[in-house]
Image (cartoon, rainbow, N blue to C red; front, top):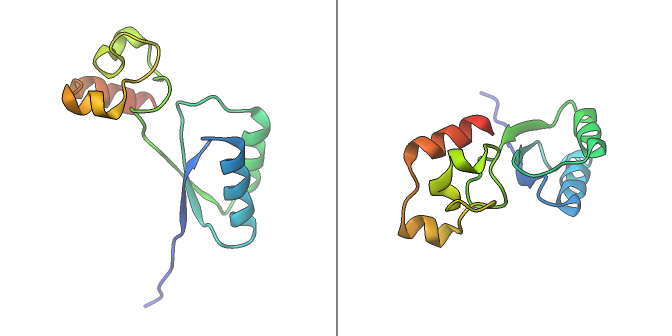
Length: 109
């Protein structure tokens, strides 16, 4: 039986520095997959660089605690408190968001 080691680098699209590091580690044979934060803005040049790496596995990093939702704020009020960005994690733990809103935001991402 063959064994494979998967080295995943989390948080692609968090910052340009994180993106560069993940791509360089993949190019050097260290990283085999990454998870993409879909609710953050991204430059088209970053998408092009990511697409060049055909052997880099890309998954989704579901996120409801950092930055802005993909859905309009009025559809995820329990995650945002009606504000533009997600509520902080400790606020969401103190008052849990509606499960349907989390599911809808995850589906949108």
